[in-house]
Length: 411
Image 1 (tube, one colour):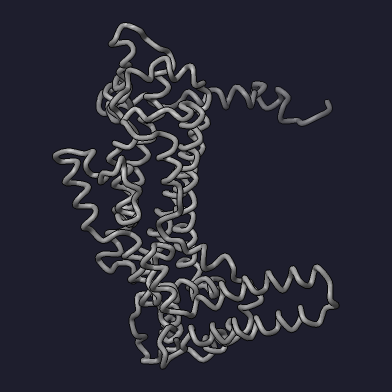
Image 2 (cartoon, helix red, strand yellow):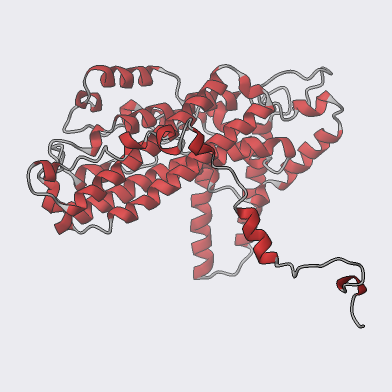
């Protein structure tokens, strides 16, 4: 007899032909249906009866049910739910900063994770406009008359979101020459007023950046070293351009160099910074800007990586808020053209005037910086790191501003 002897009948065993697929199918049905025993179930947990019955078509109430109004309501309700989640994340981040818990690096990771979540949600909200774009202007106009005077401008959560992030009230575009809070009454108005009086995320981050070690004039003095590095880099760049033969390309490079020089040297003009700050063209204090640029330059150092991720998320929030406004303007123009808004505004014209990055504006300062300007600064900080021991090493990156246990403050 050939083959495996154990498959024969000489040992008195009868082996069945096993089916792997059949075995997996049997295991897939071995669970327990706990819902049948009572207790909390999916629909009750999510209160779906309330959520799924919250779509009341005004066109249907008026006796002329319009199909696309349902899409319009669902889309805006989804926006409001995501706004609520963003507010939830922002409040938790602000609380960590307000109570000084940001000194604990474990909490810094929480801050970065939650702000990254806000970024991902905003990306989703920007993309969500594509769903509304499946509706034509004719489809929208079929039910638009039933919406007035309701308007997206009346979104309480979006206004709270703006206030808590740090949109300056002085930079808000008036709504029909009136203060934005005039469109809200009672408790909603009080909530907005309270949010204006609280410390914003931007203010809390600004105070955190101002405590960045290494900015002290009698210590590491990053700002002086940074300025010297920039000036040296500009001199080398100018020498390189001047060495070229006269040509149209050389003149273009000289013109571009002059623009770059003005932008970079303006970073070290505190009076100019204060002027731009008063106009809202810069949002961080002069010292906070220095701290941000220090983190930006030393972002590859282990302890600066998490703070850099936070700054990146804040810049992303800035950009995505602008993209959201821009996409909103495009959808409104697509559906309305130049008609007035349902709430009484000039519609597209008003919305277009509100599209601008008005929160952090850090990219304006970082965008013109090049890696070649960074080299000698990195060498200096590496030398400082090598001279630190134990807790003295931590002081280099302690953005909470605490003194190291050893008494050595390398920055």
